[in-house]
Length: 144
Image (cartoon, rainbow, N blue to C red; front, top):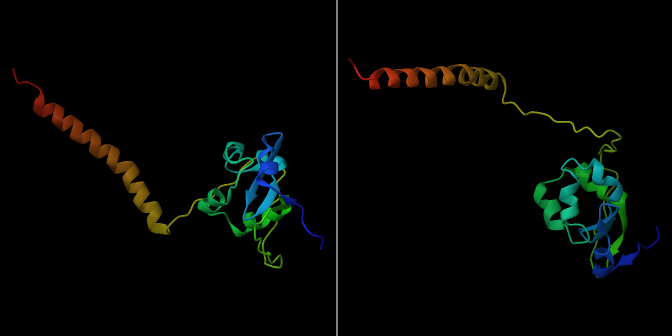
């Protein structure tokens, strides 16, 4: 494999617009311009760290293994003086290439009790609030 290109921070800092956006993650210099519109968190999140070191922000979000591997797809080089770890590409991770601009979502439920408790609260809490309000109004209305 050929040696990756080496960039300085000043070279990376020149690429910080939505037309030309580079970031540094774990010592890797990434050209994420094409990924801006596809990013599930919106392009603004990436543009805030454009032309800068973004490892801290990337790790703080808790990206999936698939997202961590996707970093390699956008790598254009490495940061000068950075130690870059090799990534094992043989893991069973599905390519997350998306041509649509829709974002998928999922909900985590704690079994059947989750639905029963939500139904209970959705029905009885508003009923309880209404009963308390009318009880208060009946007790505070002056008697003639």
